[in-house]
Structures are given as structure tokens and as C-alpha cells.
Image 1 (cartoon, helix red, strand yellow):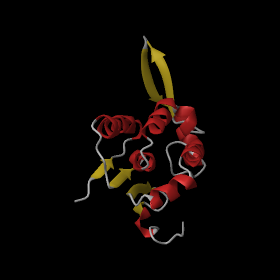
Image 2 (cartoon, rainbow, N blue to C red; image 1 turned 180 degrees about the vertical axis):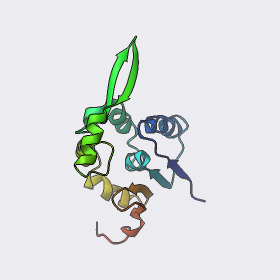
Image 3 (cartoon, helix red, strand yellow; image 1 turned 90 degrees about the vertical axis):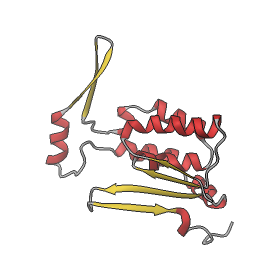
Length: 158
């Protein structure tokens, strides 16, 4: 019987899921045959499938708005020692005026992903025969897309 670890989406809430995965994999020594992720969870499953839990924690605890958005829709300020997040309406309006279909411009996120999820990691996942499935919302086509490494297993020479 296969065991799967499923990580949901939810933006910054993914850090909580990452903490749960860290607990299950490092403290409880749970092992999984399959890793499934949606949205921010899809950004985690490659690291989890390779046992790179510490690297994933470092990544998620060091990221900030600037690392994700090149045109941030959010303003974060401190009020009486508490973080308060509000919407930057001008930045959001600017994105819509320029025909972008996203709330914020996330070019920086794409750079962060390319830097931290490498081709070498992809080939290592294929080699260890752990199944990885990611689900993303494609806002350009208004469709849900599923991607799996199952297609690639057995199609490469090592």
C-alpha cells in the first residue's frame, strides 16, 4: 500500500504545512511513496520527495514580499508591535490596467522558484521513483492543471 503526503495551497499558510511535514518526516520518521501538492504545496513537494526538509524550512522562513512580488499588492506595516497587512490599491490597479491577470506581479517568485527547484532535483526525483504530483490554477486559461513525474519515469537513460 502506498503512503502519500498531501500539501494544500494557501500562500503563506504553506509554511504551516511545511512544519507539519517536517514533524512527520524528521521527528516521526514517516516515509512516503507519493507527494502531492497544490499551489504553494506544489512548490514544497520536490524538496520533500528528496528529503530536503531543512532546505525547505530555510527557504520558507527567509522569503518576504520582495522575494515574491516585483509589484506587490500588499503593504505590511507595524502598528503597536503587530504586523498589519493592507492592499496597495494603486499597484493592483496598475496590474489590471497593464492587462495582467494576477493580483500582484510575481516575476520575482518565478526567479525564486528557478533558483531553488533545479533540473538536478527533477532528475533525482525520477531516479528515486518517488511519485510527485502538482496541481496549479492556470489563471491565463482558467483551468486546473495536474503535472506528474510518472510520465518521465522510464523515459530517461541515467
